[in-house]
Image 1 (spheres, rainbow, N blue to C red):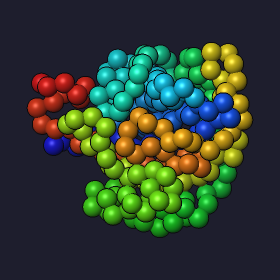
Image 2 (image 1 turned 180 degrees about the vertical axis):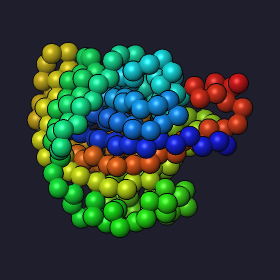
Image 3 (image 1 turned 60 degrees about the vertical axis):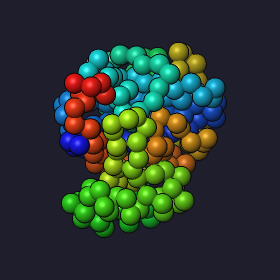
Image 4 (image 1 turned 135 degrees about the vertical axis):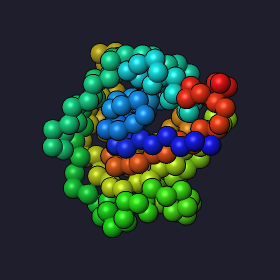
Length: 209
């Protein structure tokens, strides 16, 4: 297996309409900085919005979707306020001060927090307490490790899809079904280092090379 590293933030947000949104905002990755958005509708349909064919192929080769679209994905962060544009989705949300979970994550040294052994140790507690796992796989030849390093709750959000409102901020439930890790039930932004192990002999799109 070869390991690909992604450093950035993952935001998970639920809405009163039943739609759930997961934003990946990557400051550093094998593809350079980029952001992608995963949307699961109330009907269970899973959509990926990615900024290039290369990133779309990689994410779709790692997680599971019913539809993939290549669209401009723009993210602006001003203090605690986030603005996301990824047609047909528009999203604005704000974060609060880090809670006990965030304070606890901050105490773990960065090198330890990103080690697979440490991540695996916390998988079961994370699933029980937060409703989100720390590692797993959704596609053959891939395995994801999520090294969480900080967490801030999302305190308010406004999301629109195809010009219509998705409703008020709500818990991320039922759990999203893009991969094995899901997202915490309580809306939040997690500072994370993600490692994706890719089986030797496979390209980053998931196909045999």
